[in-house]
Image (cartoon, rainbow, N blue to C red; front, side, top):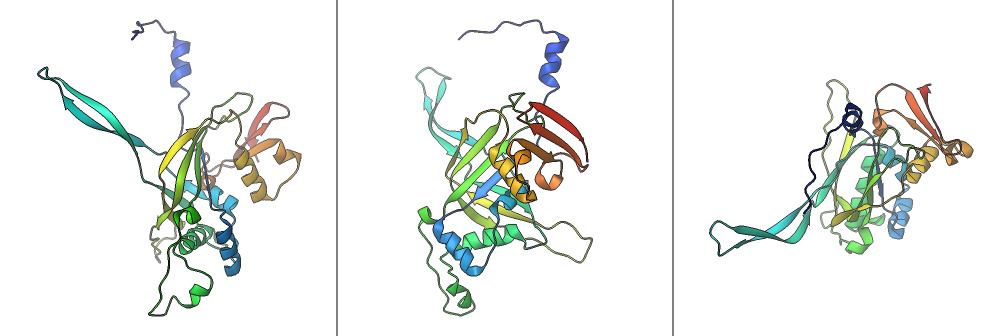
Length: 266
């Protein structure tokens, strides 16, 4: 194995490496469950579960981790011990925290509906929950597994700069638990819903550099804005509820047609 000898570095080279750190406040979570039976189930209950809006409400997430399981071999040479990898173990769950909107408590209703669907709760079953002989039948895994992606990017996201995007895709995910949410007559605070998602494994998708298409679509549908402004450019609000930037109303606009990046204040 070649050893890189010490090299002289200029101040400009050191600054270029140290003064451009990644931050934790720029990310996108995309969670969806589009199984046909679930869509019919929520229509029967009259639930308007906008999954694009749900993704924007995510305020906290975690990038996943993994570790190798190893076996130890004691060599004939005294003091020598070798470790060999035989398995890669993945974290089996991840917590996602969402702001709850005042319109319909969307995150709570979405994950409650998903878990009800897993446990075989049909629309007719709602009338039998209060009965003492209530029972349910859990669906097969292939019927209730959904999609989950976490994309990490930086505030200088720009197709002209060729910014690299880090996208984690989770396999066989479904809601494992919904944490309890305390309410109180004390000082009022924002209501948050935390869902624990189970998954089998994850992988990092090699996605092209530049803007995130799903995020463009989510913002466009959220604001009800269509046309060239959102089809060819991106206006990212710096709102902590969206997982971006500070509390000020600054914004960054990226226009792929002109190759320009403008920033300012509304």
